[in-house]
Length: 237
Ligand SMILES: Nc1ncnc2c1ncn2[C@@H]1O[C@H](COP(=O)(O)OP(=O)(O)OP(=O)(O)O)[C@@H](O)[C@H]1O
Image (tube, rainbow, N blue to C red; front, side, top):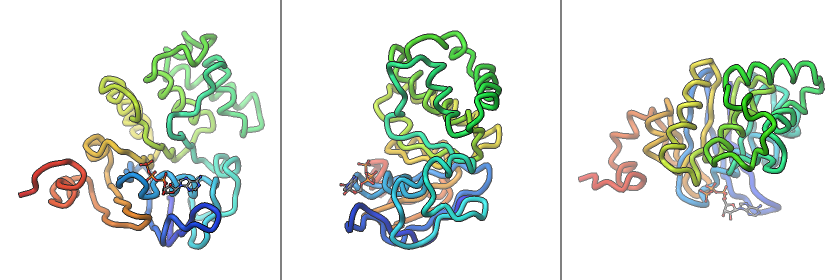
């Protein structure tokens, strides 16, 4: 469904990603982990069109994404939840959802889609007129995810959905993500919380210093001495 092949990318002339590859199959949850500065966010920004790759290809359902704007990529059926969510705190919950449908170009289609989201997340219907910034951190994160649903994506890309949330809210957001996945939406998730992503993802890709370091089924990685030692703080002995 999503295929990233030998992508090199970075900022200005500074190359951060060196020939990175990964695949996401329909309905799959794929996690990306790696140390700080490994290039995880840079990879998501490159897939979503915020950064043009220096080389390599990004394909979604067969179509080339490289060189397309985030807006067009969204219309092809990919949602993106930036680090820390990026909702508009001073706007209402409803206005945030309306903005999520901006790229649809049809307010009727967006309204229909938002109605479905309210059915799925009744608490947002109750809070439609509430200022988004007045909700809890967990609810704001859920709203950031819900907002991507207005365009009815087949893949959602998320940058650290658990960041700065308490364990209870992390459970909630991952519960929401599991439900979306059950409804058929594939997920590509950058996550610092390695235990959480190993529990949730089907497969995990490890990036290190801008390169593919390791990849495998979550179950396989959980058994790996290297992963346990480096990322789970366990004594692999
Ligand atoms: N806008 C930018 N301009 C120049 N360099 C940048 C920019 N954003 C990130 N970088 C650099 O790119 C490298 C990779 O950063 P990136 O944010 O992709 O890593 P990450 O794996 O997501 O890290 P973290 O887990 O800390 O979020 C870092 O060395 C960072 O300093």
